[in-house]
Structure formats: structure tokens, C-alpha cells
Amino acid sequence: MGKGKVTIEDIAREAGVGLGTVSRVLNNSTHVAEETRKRVLDVVKARQYQPSAAASKLARNDVVESTVGLLLPDIGNHYFFEIFEAIYRKFRGLGIDLVIFNYEKHNPKVIRRILDAQLSALLIFAFQLDDIERDMLKRRNVRYLYIDYPREHEHCIHTDNIHGGRLAARYLLEKGVTNPCYIAVEPPAQSNEERYQGFSQELALHGYTDCATFHAGLSEESGYEAARLIIEDGRYDGIFCYCDDIALGAVRAIRESGAKIRIIGFDGVRTTRFAALSTVSQDPVRIGTQAAVQIVRIMQGEREPEPLRLEITPTLIDYDS
Image (cartoon, rainbow, N blue to C red; front, side, top):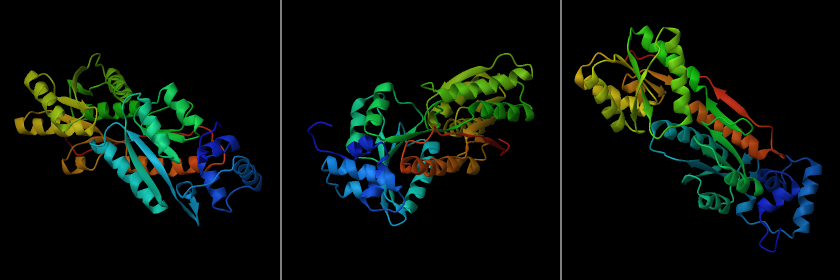
């Protein structure tokens, strides 16, 4: 381990257990197998480890106490925020602190700040780590879960975006749309490709061989401007938007102009109800709650659990927009 100060992560790594298990041993919790307790204490003794107050937070009484990091690119998006809000509510009831880290694409300094915070676990929102970042976390035994990003051999919660795109196409066709288009997000995202794939596949089943694509940033303002272009073009009578934030701006442009254009968003955020905007709902509250429940299970395990992959099936919410 070198000559530096021994940390709780060092103990966890050498004992082959999670940070939560080490903390429960240090707090004399009964929820640890005796063989595991002995293995951890042997490492503690051999390394002359002196636990700090921060390292002793994970298990007191029957309440989990720890700090979980949330690594996300943007909290201004309604969908992101509603997931964060659900996670926060669940953690508050468990005595878990939540620390938000702004993600700068593949910047090792961000991961080092996360490691310096001595987190019990990490939630990663809407993107994947690179090999260097994953290795940095695994060396310190920091377990993590992806939210809204599918990973084959890692813990993740994600939505069936292809099915969601199909639902959007069916909605527009059932409303009598004959010339639909799609507003994609810039910069491109994996979820964008999947939603468009499902949308175009469903349209193809009904004889539509081509679907025009417009582009917008992840904001209501950008959605408004994209919809203005569609309205001025005059050829389209239906719009599927990548997300509700874009759709909320687009529906305003449609209603201001009086254009006869059907529209549907994607996410299922609360605002769509009050804007009477149809949407393909991912149920962000459910995703956030599940993320909180699962990361606690993952970080409490004595050993890393088998990869968890939870897929959310989206549903249509029809406000006749």
C-alpha cells in the first residue's frame, strides 16, 4: 500500500469487501458474517489503521449513514432534476448524504475529487466512464451505478428507448399525422439514436420510408426555435421531440402560430401535465427511487454483486397535444 496514510478504501480493497462492510465492522454492526469481520479486522490490525469520524458513518443502529456521489452533466434539465429529487428524498430517509459533482468529459481531476471525498458509492448519469476513470474507481473499491445509460457488464438502470420511439410513432399516426418529423438533440446522445431508431422503425411498418430530422439543444428555447423552422417549412403535421424540455418549447411555438401540428415529447416530467403535452414517460421518480435503493444494496454487499441491469419500459401519456 505504500507509506502514505492508510484509508478505509485501502482496507476494503485488501480485505476484498465493500466500503459499507468495512464501516459496519468498525461500528460493531451485527450485520456482518463472522468470517468477514475477522478478515477485515486482521487487515485493520496489520495496517495499524485508525478510523476517522468520516470513515465510521456507514452503519449505525439500523440506519445506513454514508455519502454517495452523483456525477451528472447537467441539473438544469427537468428530467435530470426529477430523478435527482427522488434520489435525494430516498437518501434523506436513510441518513445518506448526497454530493453532486459536475462532469467534465474524461477529466481525471474530477475522478480524483470524487476519490478525495471518500464516497461510499457513486451514481453516474447519462454517460459512460472511460477505461482510465473506471480503473481509478475500482482501485479504490468505489462501487458505482449508471443511470439512464445501458452497460452490458456493469450496474445500470436504463430505459427501453427503442420501444419509447415506437410509442411516439404510434401516437402520431393514431392522431392522423401523415408527414411526421423528429427533433433530435445536439450534441448527439446514444438515447437519441435509440429513440429515433424505434420511431423510424414503427413508421416504416406503416409505409413511411423517410423521416425528416431537425436539431435542437437541450432546452425549451432551442425547441421553440426548431419548431419555428418546422412551421415555416409547412410540410409537417406531426413532431416527435427527443425530450420534454425540447417539446415544451416546440409546443409553445405551435400554439402561438395556430399551426395544425401534433406533438409528443419524451421523459414524462411533471410540467407536461400542466402544459397538456403528450409524452412517452420514463417515470423519472421511479428511476430515481430505484437508483437509490439499488446503490445502497450494491454498496452494502460484502463483495461486488453480479452486474445489475434494470430496464424501464416507458408508457404513453396522452394529453391530446
